[in-house]
Length: 310
Image (cartoon, rainbow, N blue to C red; front, side, top):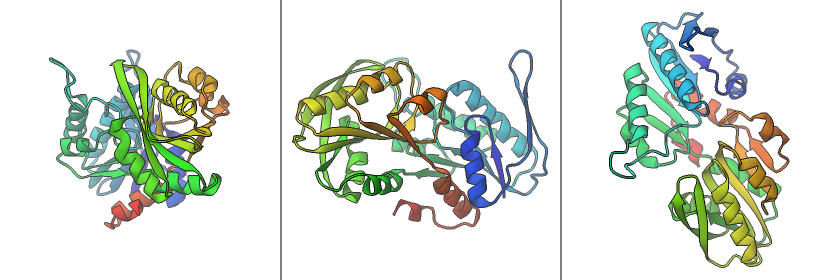
C-alpha cells in the first residue's frame, strides 16, 4: 500500500500516515512558468494499492487539476488500484440543474476522476448523497456523525440539548445525530433570495430553554449559520453551538461568526486550517486522521467500511 499527499491538506495526510505507520510516498511537485502542474513519483508504484489524499478546496480548480494529474501519473506507473481520498469533495453543491442552461458540475468532476484513472473514491459527508450515483466506480462516503456525537457527549452537559437543522434539506443529517445523543430536533425554515445570501423566516419547533446544536455539512460564508443562531436566541434558546463537517470559511465568515450569538463552531480538518481559522477563538477542529486511516486500512484489506458508521 502507498499513501500519497497532494498539496491541499498535507497535515491530514501526515496524520493518516502516522495512524497507519506508513510514510508518505515521495513526490516531486513543481509548476512551469505558466502555472502548468508537473508531478513525478519518486518511488515504484507498480502493482501497489495507492491512496491519494486531496481535498478540492480553495483554490478548487488547482487542487482538482493536481489530483487528476497525480491519478494519471499513477495509472501510467502501473498502480494496481488508485483510490482518490477526498475529505472535501468540491463542486458537490452543483449536483443538479438549478435553471436553464446551467451545468451539473458534480457529475463532470465524477467523469473527470474516472477518466483520469481513479478506481475508487473515498470521501466524507457528500453534500448530496445522490452524487455517489454519478460514478461508475465504488464510492465510500464516510459520515462524521460518530465523531460529532462522541465530542458532544464528552464536552457538553446531557440535559436540555436540542439538535437543529439549518434548513429542510439537512433534516436527515440532524436526525441521525440527534438519535445518537439522544435529544429532540428543530428545523429552521430558510428562504434564499440569491446564492451566498439567506434569510431565516421561522423556527419550526420549541427551542425555548434548550442548548441548541446546529449541524450542517458545509459552512461557507456563514450567513445561514449566523442567521439561524440569531433566530434561535430570539426564540428563547439558552445557547447556540454549531457542528459542521467542512469549514470552507469564505469572507466574511470570520467577522460574522465573531459577532454572532454562536458560542462555538466545531469543524473537522477536512480542509486545512488557515491562519484566520487558528486565530478565531470560536472555531475548534476535530481530527479526521483516525477515521480516514481506519477506512483506508479496511479498503486495503478488503474489510467492511460500513462498520465505521456504527
